[in-house]
Length: 319
Image (cartoon, rainbow, N blue to C red; front, side, top):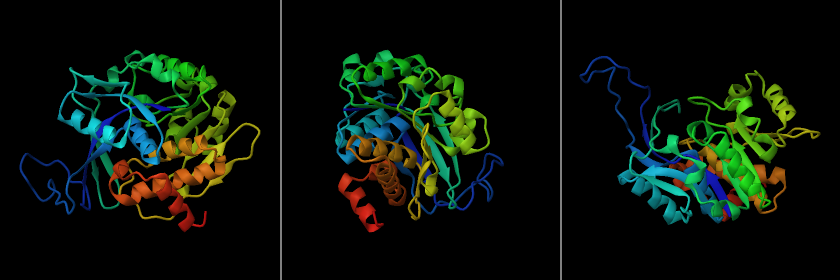
């Protein structure tokens, strides 16, 4: 079983306008009102919920350790997850907090401004999930670290230790680089227990304080990272390992509708492919293909593909 620890939100997308309006006064005006050609979209969000949903869509058994409120949005988000088959034994329904939300304004050039409400996620602890769940893990993914302050670092280390005792594979995504981003010192106690460390280019630079991907990669490998996977968006992904040449797999040339959820789709699909015995290069291509399907579908991860759909996409692109 896959176990995912991470955030759960309801995402609201406001799009279909050429530029973001600016504050002027408390009345409608030409500069403060944007006409939207597309309707408001509501979808599943949060690094943890996205990742679990994608894994379930691919056919994996997966449990999500996260939280939402006991409100309408909480009912909606747990309904999406249950319908997809995600196990919610480690999912907390808070009586004191509303469900976390992210409201994103996305212009026609895909520039984005987001407004985030954390709900119960800042109070989520390792002890909120049953220990027996971690004993059933074959792969653990920790994601959304900066948005789970009560879990970091002791709760994350406890979870990693619990699944490593069962021989499970482990992965930590250091993003997103918001609030108090994950720094190298925060990662130090987790690296000995982490098989795959994952970041995008921006998160990597914020974590290490270094200007280039290569310098950041060397810094993390020297600190004890076993395998560093760097997501490069449309440019694919790179893998850095001690005593190995850098492995790079290119992305696929697709036109993105919504980029939210792409990174989570990549993470889940990569770990799924590795669990199915794919070699690393093939697993990276599989993950990039799944992410490409999600960004072109316009539904974020609610449009997550099945394994046959990803394999059909790969065949269409010569893999």
